[in-house]
Image (cartoon, rainbow, N blue to C red; front, side, top):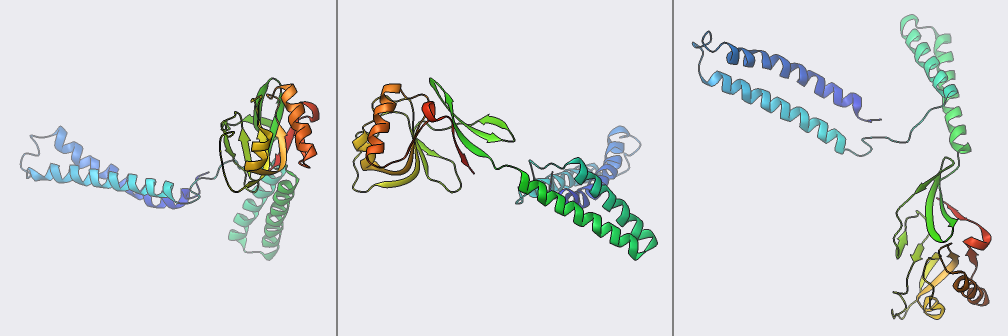
Length: 250
C-alpha cells in the first residue's frame, strides 16, 4: 500500500488538470496554424514549455514521494472479521458526522477498539519466520519458513547468513584450512556443508561456535567423525540427517 498516496494525490491531481487545460491551446496552435497566424510566434513555444515544466514537476513529485521512508507497505493483510469491524466503524463515524449523536460515536469508537484488539490478537497468534536447514540428502538446502510455506533463499557457500540477532556462518569447502589468526571469532551457529575434509583443529582455532549444524550434504563418514570430535570438546552438534531439520526463529 502506498503510504503517501493521499498526499501525493492532493499535489498531483490539480497539476494534471492544469496540464490537460494547457494542452488545449497548444493543440489549437498546431491544428489551426492559419487561423492563429495573427498570434506571435513565441506563443506556441511558451505553451509547449509550460506543459513540459508542469509534467516534469508532476513526475518529480511522484518520484520524491516514492523515495520517502516507508513509502510502500507490503505484506499487510486483514481478516474477514477485522474487515467487518473496520467497515462498521467507517459507517458509524460517517453517520455521526451527519447527526452528531454521542451514542453513535460511542459505538463507532467501540468498533474501532474491537478492530485494534482483534488485529493485535491475530499478530500475537501468528508464528514468526524461521530459518530452516532442511534434510534434503545429498543436497544442501536452507530455506525461510513463513506462513507454513518454505521459501528458498540464496545463501553464500562461505559467508554470513542474515539474521537480526544471531551470528551465523556457513562453510562449504576447505578454503579456511590455510587461514591463520591470533584470535578466535565467536559465532552462535556454524553450519558445515558439502566438504568431506574439514580440519577440526583449524575450525576450533578460527571459530568459537555455540552450536555446529551439519547439513544433509556432508558425507556421512565425515559428519560422524566431526560430530564425535565436537562432542568431545563440549560443543553441541545438530546433525540434520540424524536429528532432523534445524530451525531458528527470526
